[in-house]
Image (cartoon, rainbow, N blue to C red; front, top):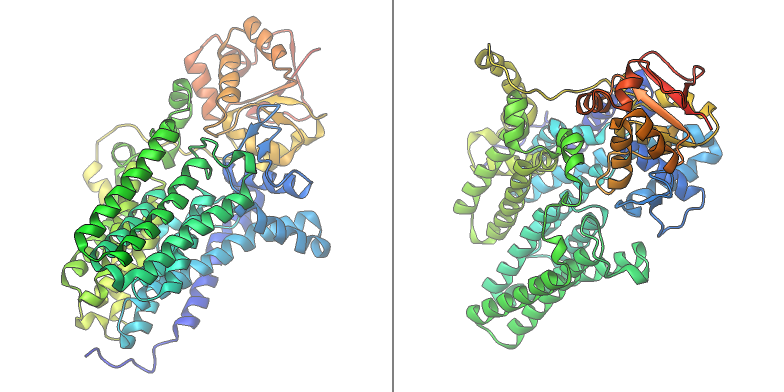
Length: 595
């Protein structure tokens, strides 16, 4: 028996509210200091531009960013994120005006999602525990989730890109699918959360796919005993993905081979996977037997994968396969979130514990739980373990997966500790142990201990530029709004800020679909001045922005010491360019092409 709950222990709802408020304040301090618009990442800034365009009348199905590499680039983002942001601005605008409505939306949206993440994590932990342990588990899960440092950056003020919504949807997916065996309504909701997550972006596809495979395995093993929840999951996944396709995609593009966003390939996997599960359930209903169900699932899976390979063979490749090799070395290779664990180990080994120790430790607890759990809870632990394992694998391949892996691991770690049925569960001991095992504690150990081992060692480092000095902030680009609107050749990471702060068009931007615009910038700025002139005229460029604090400028000079960028960095402008002193600042210069 677990020790009785002390009457001095606070209610989880009160703790959740207090922790949520503390996180919102802590994550909002940079926005208070610098202004919320200057806390936006490049993706956040372009998301704001996309929402503004939607409110200005751009079509719901039209995701073209017309001022990026004019006449425009079709973005791979989702209106599922744009819609609530636009609604918030529309509701607040009559009361506060456009500017303050945007400011409040930039703060409110990630804060609300943080509250949802805390609640979902607490609920996941509690539903895996006995009734007498649930409140303690909720308290511990709230604390550990609040200390999931790799994920918190996605909930800071100004974080309106899709990652925080995907994390919340994944937590909802885990909550519902863990209860699938015994509740058909949760099974249907799991299908809906999975389809919604994939409609937002494909980052969680490995985890959702592996969890769905576990549902198939459950149906094969138990047959008619789980027929109703399995059918509910399959119908929820197929039905919601088809409905989302109709809401988000033009009818004539439903089968288009879009490999980096919600489109034909993902729709085939979701709707086809749901239908395949229903077909296996139909076989199980008509004819009993494990091997019959196993054969039916194998045939259905083979048909689905065969149809996918035949219809979309180009999608069986790296998501960045379309990026030009020159841009991989010039830009993509320095994007931190795309780095693998081996690259991080070479550049910032002191951060390995902070990113990977907690989810891997939790994976061990979950594996032990699978081995020692009762038959009634075995599916819950198997699907949790497989989902977390997929997230861990993804994070080893790309660092961006570490955020979801850490925050999903938070409630599972607490539930795994409670399952051990030791004295740890008593009173505040569970919270203390959870604090010791949290990502913040493990990451702090790595940062504190590594210097003692790394004394005298060298190697490549991850350079983190100052956003203002590297011309990435909206405030630094605001002065450019005084110029007549035109086409501007600027560093890759400056593009979103310029789009958000001005009416100018830009060619370069940190997006894998923008091969043409990024290559145009690199080729023009590394060409000899006279050759560059012809390229600039062909693109009808009006302005050039050079930023000595940007990575682009350093790399352009390194690639071509006598190219246009190198000449402009030294202040040696060809006669077809003139500096625009009115908007130039120390560290960066705007040049106008003479007509």
